[in-house]
Image 1 (tube, rainbow, N blue to C red):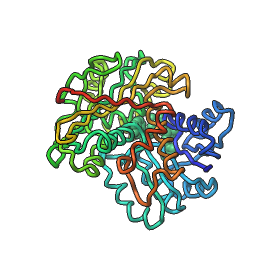
Image 2: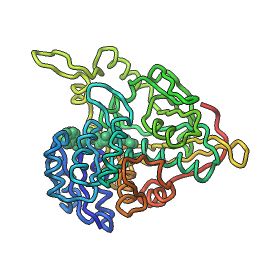
Image 3: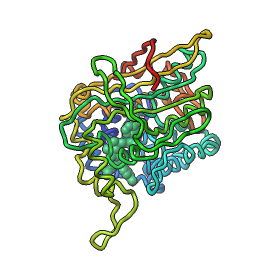
Image 4: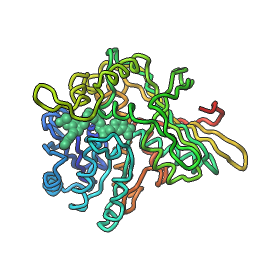
Length: 397
Ligand code: NDP
């Protein structure tokens, strides 16, 4: 039975809070804190006020430290934005409290996705005797765990992975993103990188397109290659991997809007002068686009996120596809959020359960593939995200 502090009351924070409340056997006292306290109170009201709420600016370390000292949690679950990761890690170091997040740190002024900044906390977390679990969402997160499962159970040597993320759902809006628009657009417009023969190879964003036939009635969809942060930690911790690629589905409609927005400069992340003041175009765009939270009641269809791992078993070539299917409407019925927030929030809570029950433990900074995948997946299924494993053959992507 442990006290937990959740920071961030957006789409993911809502799911994390609902799911922690469902597991009172683990999370005895829950505090939800965010920049806008009213958003925490709205979530608390959905849960009959059974949690505490607070206001915090997670870019302000002394404010964070004061809140952590007051709440005295065993663990801080960071589901604010990637920009806050290092500040929250600093506050955890100062107070000696464990840390978990779902996305790697990003500097506000450069869209760089890498673990270097957070891995640099390794010695300090070890010396303090505390643990940080990085990237406990779906991708990164469950995709790392699926790769570790392939390496533990299905293949002797994992040589190639394709991580494939399909959102086969539809919200009926002309253009909207399923999670924070600023973070989403920074990610998909970044230079693509994939791992090949010991190094990352760069290509233009979304320039490589394939068709993948998704299981369970979803069928063929266009997938586009992009860089995703879990490849960096997976190839480091499972060094037999020679090739790693990440693919995501985008509709023609989404890509058409994105291209125009890029061409007119609306996705820029630097400051421009407007009406006598400085604005960042992508932040202005975020203010105009639908709030991802508002898509919950509108979104229908499924997500399918998984990993195809290829390699050898008993000296023979073998492939395994490990995935989850999640239904937007079922998620909304359960926690009043669509499947993108759900598939991120549930693994965050399962990561927290792994840490608080000591099933995954260690001092320092850890990525998901470094721990026993089966212990995690045993809890993930009953919490709402069951795993499907299929052995077979899939075309090279
Ligand atoms: P939202 O934008 O919906 O929510 C972010 C929340 O953080 C908001 O409540 C926001 O407050 C709060 N916040 C922002 N800045 C601060 C600050 N300085 N101090 C305190 N609170 C702050 O984002 P999502 O819920 O969609 O995403 C949350 C995280 O999950 C992100 O890091 C995202 O990258 C990650 N993610 C990970 C995925 C995975 O599979 N691994 C997939 C999807 C998302 P306010 O309401 O005041 O703006």
